[in-house]
Length: 59
Image 1 (cartoon, rainbow, N blue to C red):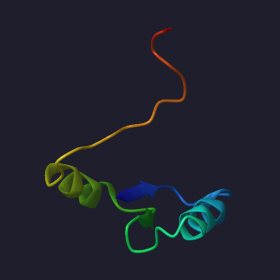
Image 2 (cartoon, one colour; image 1 turned 30 degrees about the vertical axis):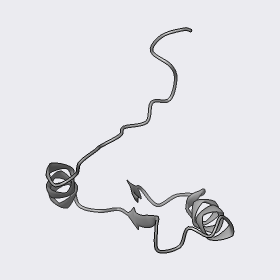
Image 3 (cartoon, helix red, strand yellow; image 1 turned 45 degrees about the horizontal axis):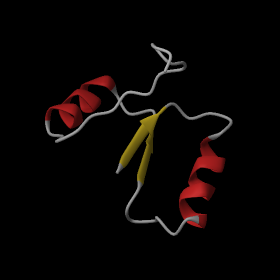
Image 4 (tube, rainbow, N blue to C red; image 1 turned 90 degrees about the vertical axis):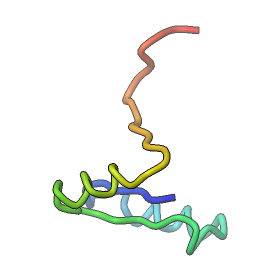
């Protein structure tokens, strides 16, 4: 799994969570990757997921 985003206040907490769950080497964390490089990653993926801040529907 690859996680990509901007460096911020929660960056270390996310890395600590990956480590505490024993997922080092299975979860790669990248920060502040240039847009052109992100586009290349997206083109080579089998599945791409974009999180949303809130649900678009109610269940």
